[in-house]
Amino acid sequence: MIIRDIKQTILFEPLGADVNELFIVSGYATPNMLSWYIKNLEGKTRTPIKIHLLIGMIPYDGISVGAHEGFVQLIRDDKPEEVDQLECSYLFDMPAVNSNIYIWAKDGNPVSSFAGSANFVQNAFVGTRRQEVMMSCAVDEAMREYESLIGRSIYINHAEIEEYITIHPTQPVFDRENNLVEGVDALERQGYPVVHLSLVMRTGEPGRRSGLNWGQRPNRNPNEAYIPLPVRIARRGFFPLEGERHFTVITDDRRQLILRVEQQNDKAITTPARNSDLGEYFRNRLGLANGAYVDRASLDAYGRTDVAFVKLDEETYYMDFSV
Image 1: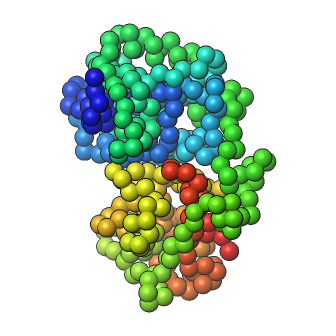
Image 2 (image 1 turned 120 degrees about the vertical axis):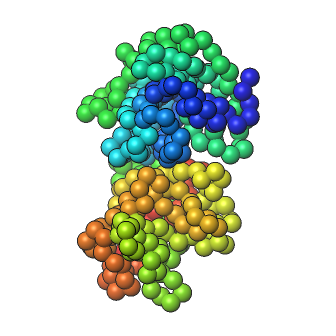
Image 3 (image 1 turned 180 degrees about the vertical axis):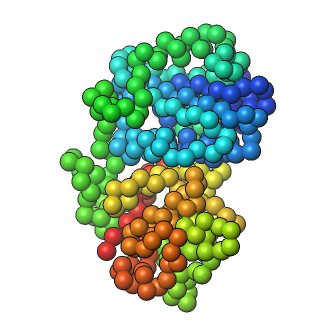
């Protein structure tokens, strides 16, 4: 049985062999876990790999708007050189499948495989909140199981995806018609924890080469940015810090972002796929050109110098930058 450090045994050690494909069947999966895995593949592959993820419990539970849009965004995003191809599919008819199978292959031919309790979610692989049990299994049998499900699956970015699966507006920031609620105050009255993070320093100005201007240095992408995270808030446990976990943010303008906390003393909230994504987002909200320097006048003209986060659950947040 594989009980300890399953992420290394299941997801990383096989990369040392002559493999170039990973096939995953998982009852439940999250875009945060997929984002985390792609980020942590950097520098660990012999050759670029193809990742095929098939999520099996969709016919039984459906999926939330936030999770679905997160997967779609990851498919659209540029991939690091370690990832040659990324495919994600949903099982769309009964019976739903609550199995968790991980198959490593070379050009479609299975080399090693594992099965067990670990869904493709961060709580299963990152940190110490849950103990999972995985075991090696027969590679040919595992591959036959994967292939048997392909005909009952559909790519998540299929043009008619909503005709095949149920997408629930389950996040509290959406009402039954998928419209945003009144905002942070309404969520706080419902008991959701809230923090406000300043985008300016004690001087009242944004950092010259930090924060929203992190990339304003030679040989850097000028859009690179992070949201400053004070130590007192980082230590409070409001944001996930353990193992550089990724989390999903739904913004007040209906955007979907995947973020993580990083840097020394957990001082920065960034977009892990590309640090420039966050800078582009805020410059667009402020009406600035890509790569422009963000000064106090730009924030004042917009009408706000801070951003609010509402914690909806352990992996999902609402981010408000409205005026």
